[in-house]
Image 1: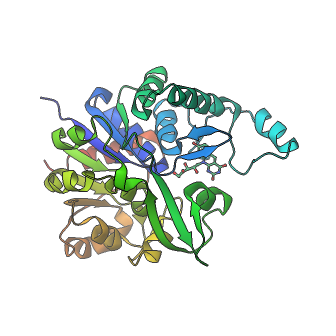
Image 2 (image 1 turned 60 degrees about the vertical axis):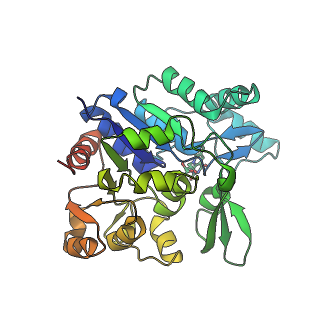
Length: 311
Ligand code: FO1
């Protein structure tokens, strides 16, 4: 019986790991449960950055420099929008806009986000199943220094996450329901993989959906995470600063402490080999391996380590 894998995913790091995983495991055996807390409504469009980053990366269509948006993109619409004095701080390429137009139109026809996502996954030729963690509204909100609360993309893109965060909340989480197939994907997986995504703003929104944290804790022995922090820093984005701002240390030990209630094994990079025993002191088994995914072969090698964690 081939193992079935469920992956908890945010943006770039998760997409990279999944791109390698499909080289190791038949894509049909993989379900990715993806964060929607980064979703944003702009220009009357519903934009789902983490879903699109996984979609484009797995279709080998991703802009590899940025890790988001499409390769070989043009920017005529944004140029014209700029001339009109429109909103241009969030860059939407001409081809990328087609995805947002399609998703928004389908949602306006009453189709659920999970259904539209499945349509897009099929059009982009993805073998794996792409599930939004919820079809309900969920938005990450950040209270920044000075007390103002802003949306995730205002924080991440407009302010270039160059501002201290005092609190994070997931608006809508109390009423959000796990999307169709999400709880079953957690319950039935041979291995649940927590991709190297930002624990605070990519993984925590998943657990904020009622039922998810309990479902994961029930499978703790099968849950293995890849640390998004290497040698005390995030490879991309603000994961290190946010961990510290939330009272955790920016290290693999901080990540282990954050995940310990529902993750039994943490894969850390060789750069942190000296901290393996400190990770295990948090009650989390530790595996040391190369975790920098600079190409698909390295992502595939890391996937092999992750999927062998419970052998
Ligand atoms: N990130 C940026 O740093 N600048 C952008 O202008 C930008 C535009 C953008 C458009 C579509 C999309 O799907 C993602 C985009 N991102 C941009 C990345 C996005 O903010 C991140 O992917 C996340 O939400 C964090 O994972």
